[in-house]
Length: 126
Image (cartoon, rainbow, N blue to C red):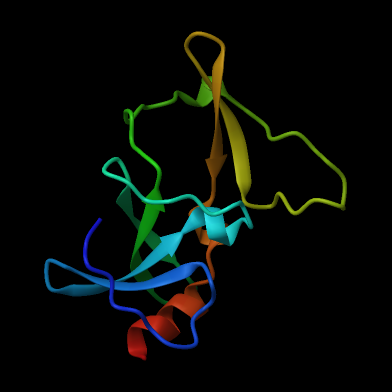
């Protein structure tokens, strides 16, 4: 992990900001965003960089992950529609379930639906 600068009055899932090649980038903990139990960061903890799109801007964000094992391309024919759970669960950010080798699967998220660009822009602007 890198040095994180805390920013006051942020949503709990925003850890702060980091300097990534001269750009101020909000750092998000998706586990906290989804309300999961906190985990301690270790030598395998890292963050991935994503572009978050809103109506008139793109914000670069860092997303904390436990570890990265590999990056895979999943062909469209190997992506199933997400299951429907009814109205009780918010799953609008799940775009599909990727079928991987060895009967493994991966939940595919729409990062623009998971995170709120307005909240993150406020973090960057202070």
